[in-house]
Amino acid sequence: MTKYTLNFEKPLKDIEDKIISLKNTSNKTGLDVSHQIITLEKELRNKSNEIYKNLTRWERVQLARHPKRPNTLDYIRVITDNFFELHGDRCFGDDPAIISGIGKIESKSVFIIGHQKGKGTKDKLKRNFGMPRPEGYRKAYRIMQLAEKFSIPIITFLDTPGAYPGLGAEQRGQAEAIAKNIYKMSFLKTPILSIVIGEGASGGALGIGVCDKLVCLENTWYSVISPEGCASILYHDSTKAEDAADSMKVTSLDLLKMGIADGIIDEPTGGAHNDLLSTGELVKKSILQFINEYEQKSIDELINNRLKKYDSMGNWDE
Image (cartoon, rainbow, N blue to C red; front, side, top):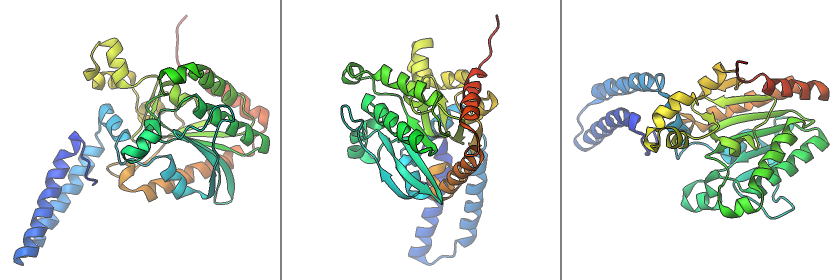
């Protein structure tokens, strides 16, 4: 496990500490404690399976926000060859909260657009904690146009607490930029796959999330608002975020049951941050399957199916 420990992971940390203590004692005294260590390691495996197979919605939200969780650039490094990042919206500037560019996954060319939260304080400030400004969405729009022009599939990685709500962003047309992207992606003449790799909040995620197929990593969430935001509105108390997460049904499993997500990518025990390489291989496999399935479809079929996908979401009574 990583050094950062979530509340529900504390029983595992206690067992790990006992194992480390026994190993240190053995090194200092020469005592044979291998039997005790084996017993504790077995207990650790059993406890890990028990905890991670029975996570609550709120615990999955916490895992999705884990500070060590892989981000867009991590997956790009693992799954692509010769990735070339493209910058700027040709209007105002470049937004580091959105990564965009072209690369190859095995023999397949793809355009990639994704949220980037950053690693470490300095990088997180540079990336604005993964909250894009209008120029980020306009950069994404420019990349979408390039992908359409050259008939290259688009892969988007969703991982944001929401679009940046600052005054400058509003003055530069935040809502218009997101709305324009949603409209553009609805009729884009090339296949689009969206993968939720962390948290997907509100229009900040949807601004690059309209797609032919949506898949989620196992410990992720995707919703119109964060659990804290929902709790503040409904209960006037942000500390009731756990109740809000249950009410909204925000997890990947919920999305799959409701027909919003089209698939789930399994994560290693404890979360994607425990084994980036194996998680990356599963993400890569999912992308290649998507391309092989969708690159044969005609443009009319692609767009019609995409519109039907969103038209069929939700239930209502007249």
